[in-house]
Image 1: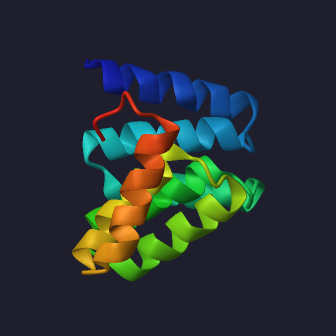
Image 2 (image 1 turned 60 degrees about the vertical axis):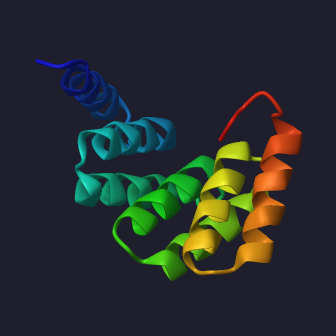
Amino acid sequence: RGQLDLAILDLELALKSNPRSALALANRGEVRRAKGDLQGAWADFNAALAVNPRNAVALASRGAVAALQGDLHAALGDLDASLSLEPGYVAALAQRGAVRRLLRQYDGALLDFDSALQANPRDAL
């Protein structure tokens, strides 16, 4: 078994003891996304947000999945919501910049990329 499969097993064990753990649900969503299981990731991020609708990480991650599935407007909505909760969240800024670029919202994309680089100048995005 690969490391991602082992991570899924560990997270499922954690969820057996606490099925409403937003952290475990969001982490399992991240692992599923890394495995290419976008539907599973989407379901996990939705479940994490049902537990904690103010989870900026789960919102940004769900936005990333929406972008991967081609729903750029849904992605933008989730990323905007994430950044309204955590304005300096670098991963969400970078992802929103990428989505805005795909939507040809170039000025907004540049602002997001600049903000992400100001927050973390050592990250090449």
